[in-house]
Length: 137
Image 1: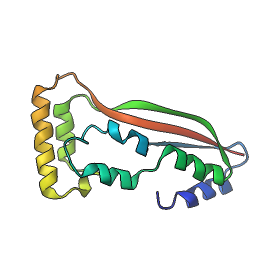
Image 2: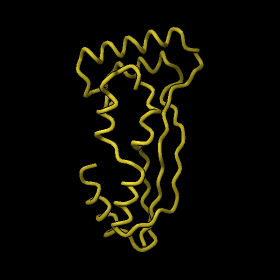
Image 3: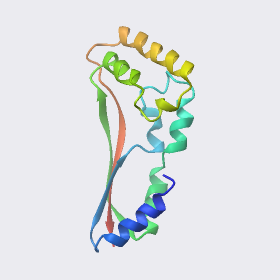
Image 4: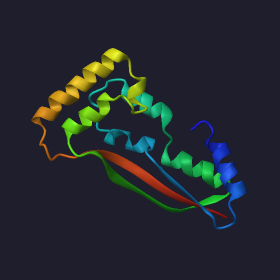
C-alpha cells in the first residue's frame, strides 16, 4: 500500500464527480481470520506489514476527495476443505506464504496436512474480506 495515496489521487483525477472506486481486500482488522495464522509463527507480522486498516484506507480516499458509499466485510471461501487448502498452499503461490523461510513453510504445511486429517472433510476454509465503494465528490 506504499502508493495508495497516489492511487487515490489518480482515481479522483480520472473519475468524474459521482464516479466510484471499488476496493476488495483484506484489512489489518481481519488478520485473525486468516486460516494459516496458527500454522506459520511469523506470518502474522508479514501480513500486518502489507495490509492497511479500514480507518487508514478511508482517510486516504477521503483526503483525495472521496466519500465512503458502502462498506462490508464478508467471509470468503478459499478452499472447500483443509486437505485441498494444504494442496493449494503447497504451491507457495500465496504472496504471504511465499515470504516465509523455507523451514517454517515446510513445518507449517506439514501442520496443516496433519490438521486436515482430523478436520471434517466438509469444513470449508476461508477468511474475512472487506469490500469498499468510495464515491468521487
